[in-house]
Length: 363
Ligand code: 9MR
Image (tube, rainbow, N blue to C red; front, side, top):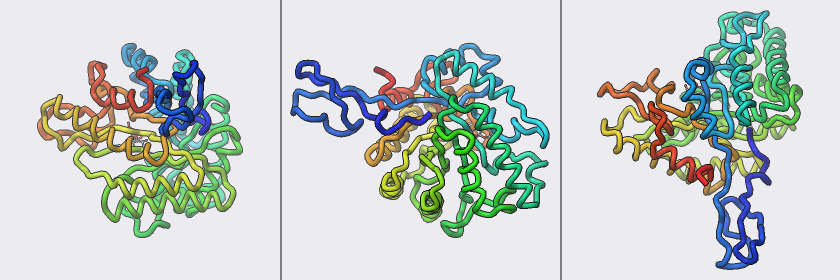
């Protein structure tokens, strides 16, 4: 759930007569000189959650409830889970996660409405533009309106850029671009807005924070999409930085920050939506590895924060017990990956401390 800019302002407790002042989350204390000390700000911290693990593993649920202010289903709202066939919507897993969030007083984000990943074969087989627009918009209408008023923000379009875009206008080839071209993006945002006018609508992307032409092109592509939506008066509220960080890749601080300045100039929010640190190339020793992982995340968060404090920070999982990373990035030494804030025994690692300090959730 994203927060309005006003909610992102930290309350600064004035030492002078206990006066309460409201000031920028990062900025200098307002007003009265050295006596004012900045209290920690509050940025909602959340994590992606797996429905099967939640059902089977009580300690995992307790860790999520204890550490998070919001959750996002890691798979429960994706097309292959919701749409086993054209006629059916299966909300079982998403509803169980929503019920868990409600029981524990947590917010929920929605992920995702239009994404190439794992589209069911029946949908991928659509060739008619008219049918494609109907299937896409009716899906969005049904899913978004089911959680209207509870899911506060949606990753409407996820990963629109190809890995190596030929130009900023290049888009990933899958059923919606094959049938509707670039127009699938405004169609999706308009449908999401119609289904829940209060929901914050997010364009979510990965691999935009590194040095090199491929990453610069991906940043330019995301900016072009956002600009085009705004120019047409189509609602978009935020850019999601997935932030699947590679521990051994160099961040392009300048490139990332000028990208963020453009987003800020468009008056869009920024969220960190899927933070984790891929440790496949790091030393075996846990303490060394965990320290490098934490430092990479801290460097990234600070670079973002210097331009625009994110309205939420979510990690893609809470514990190394349940992470997507080994699907693609297993370690050659045979030890398990350690990309997330809690280890596989649910003990906090230095990454947890970095996030708690950054979001103010430790205080
Ligand atoms: O972590 C998710 C993994 O469990 C799924 O198998 C996979 C396919 O649905 O998606 C993973 O999540 C991805 C997310 O939806 C989009 N950004 C990249 C994430 C990691 O691959």
